[in-house]
Amino acid sequence: MKKNFMFVLAVVCSIWLLSGVVLAQGHYVIDGSSTTGNQNYEGYSDVDGGVFYVTNTGDLTIESSTFVNNKSTGNSLGDGGGAIYNEGKTSITRGVLFSSNRAKGYGGAIYNNNGSTMTISGTNITFSSNSARYGGAIYNNNGSTMTISGTDITFSSNSAYNGGAISNSKSTMTIDGQNIAFTNNIAVSSGGAIYNSSATLNLISKGTMTFTGNTANGVSNAIHDNKGIINLFAEGDNSQIIFNDRITSENSNSTLNINE
Image (cartoon, rainbow, N blue to C red; front, side, top):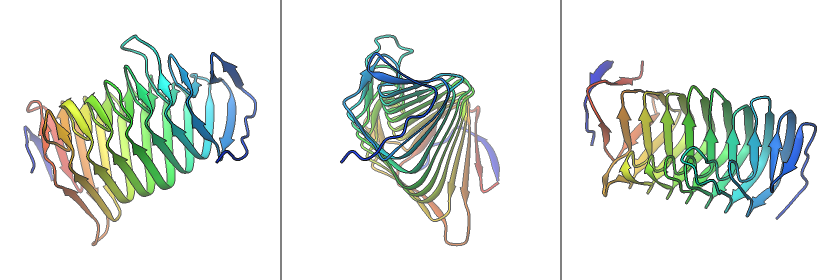
């Protein structure tokens, strides 16, 4: 079914850092191929990418790590990525925790920018209490591609002006898996959980995906769309996507596809 619409619906372990890593100004600059794993990154800060800045030639793999209380210190509106700023290729595997990271600009935990690619996969993927002006947990921007897939994926209590948990702008975002929950995320203006602007958002449930307690401007809101495309898929007879919060659009140039 396809419809053009204006709508409202109701411990530190070992770390491996290989070639292509430069420690600069308190964070890691990745301009080659690098791998890190089983690490707790806490209290890092820098202008862009509190912990990691991945350049357009960088290729970073992160395994089973946590990112807590890191921040982007840049004052420019274009700065961001409290934990990770990515302009290259980043892969995060075997689960991850992003908690209480923040940015003054974009992406409290992650800023995926300028045609970059990021994949996050595994069990127990959690974004909680991250904050930014745009995209409390994640800002995906300018022709970039981000895929989050696995089991037990949680976005909770993240906050922003637009996109309490995620802001997806002129890019493609896919969230795919089992037991996915967006809970109690807050946007001051639009997109309590997700703000989708001139972008493609794919939500694929292989079990249960729920939106509960998310708000924008004090009102129930799961997703707000502005001239974008939202694709909703529930794969399998027992799969479902449950919206306890509303989906809204800014104008009639939004498209909602269900199980197409």
